[in-house]
Length: 437
Image (cartoon, rainbow, N blue to C red; front, side, top):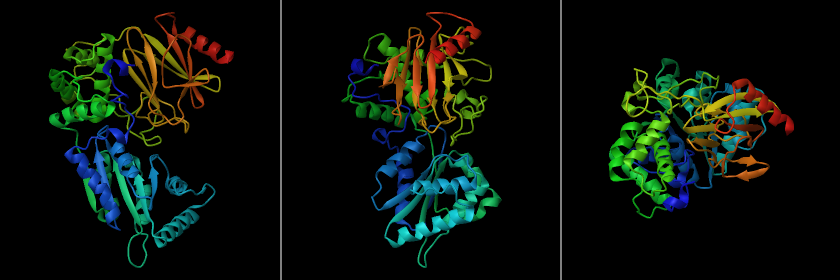
């Protein structure tokens, strides 16, 4: 994409959590220290909360990567589960196949395993991301697991990470016993303006900027006003602004590039968003995430109360879509998605613009970036990759009729610019493509 133009080794503003790019603000450093404290204390039980996109998952991945080999970890990301499913997930993380076990057997197996590992001198840790989606029953199971102990000390260390709603749940009278076991609670805020500036420069440096100026000095105030210092939003806006600069074949991102990116994303200033929070709920029926269970993020379509978009407060008229993506599996079209200037994030969780609920799909699997001239699909460091004609690709300029394979699903690309059609004909075209395969 723009790597050669900006003389970078890798993309600096990917949305997927990458510990290599972790920027430790004062608050992030403190949160990481709290996580590390679970290793020091045998009764370690830490709760970390933060808004959507504030960097919780990246922090967790960094923390886990730095653990010593004598620490065994059960990492749970799917949190829209029953208590039995949760216990099964814990055992699966430790290498068991517990799917035929009843609850009593699940609990006995976990208890025995914890005691055995403790006796062998190993530390055992449970890390739950997107914990705000856990039911009260599952949280009660976690409380009971936290009570497993020898004659001397507790056996299981626990980290719960989630959005601010997690605090609301823990403060409920019904969960008072669990809350009393929590040693530390910390809320991770967004970056300050100064921290955001350092964050951007840090990611560019990791990507290979070697101190070169890539964002003009007058862009940072606008970047902060439209992102609120939320790292994920910063990544999205910076990446789009760099794409804008690359279309001019310029290696310096100007204020006009940032404004063009804001217009393409249809953003308003962060403070104007409803409660400074991202839209929640997926009208397409996606679950609140974690199981794919995260809250839905629609940062590209937030609007102010007057119904305006963009940087100048004028009404946004999206007009005719530039292209369409049909999602298909088993030879049948599942859904259709229009593409306008901006980006479409595709992944397993409901936090994506297009959710594919499949174990073969990564949390944030790939993205499609649409401009007036083209659409590009890009792999976001997914586990299983994206394929075009059975060949794995990292990114690809989409052409009309391309079929991109993601796990057991297929994305059929229809370019409106090359062959404008009506909706019913698109479905016919998709069926034809699938049948031909």
